[in-house]
Image 1: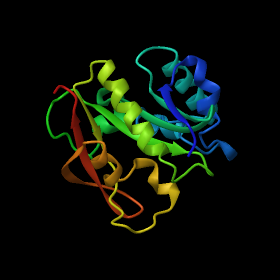
Image 2 (image 1 turned 90 degrees about the vertical axis):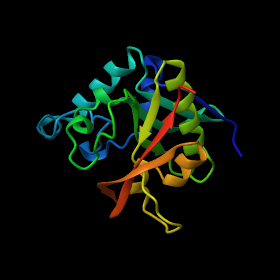
Image 3 (image 1 turned 120 degrees about the vertical axis):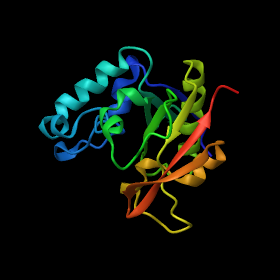
Image 4 (image 1 turned 180 degrees about the horizontal axis):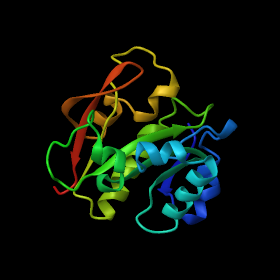
Length: 193
């Protein structure tokens, strides 16, 4: 197993994060999908989305964490206070369960060739530690439960229920959102205790 380290995605790690995000052919959301309204996102360009990510990385709190295996960037996890995700704030499929000022974990990317090595678990542990250090009262996530079935990695950016349960998150409710035609669960982890 590689030596995995996870650190906040600060401005000096911008190139490392970009190396992990899909950008070929102008495709890829650069973790801006939930931050923008549907209209603003559809009008955005890859360059604009990458620029926005760079601006987010230039000021605290960091918009995510980066995982390194033996010093090479291999994973990314995006999260922020839910209020920074305009699309989540307006979502009809992922509801509010209360008015707690939680942070939302919205995306995982693990580089091909490094999957099934514990990178997602390390990223989530890093996200929990960082959110706690920044005073977040809790984390919320919206993963799927593949129930032991294989799911295309294209749909696993939301994470799996199992990974979140292992990190101490609890299921709160099934949402109306889906990924890979599977329902996404709203899960929570209290960081105040």
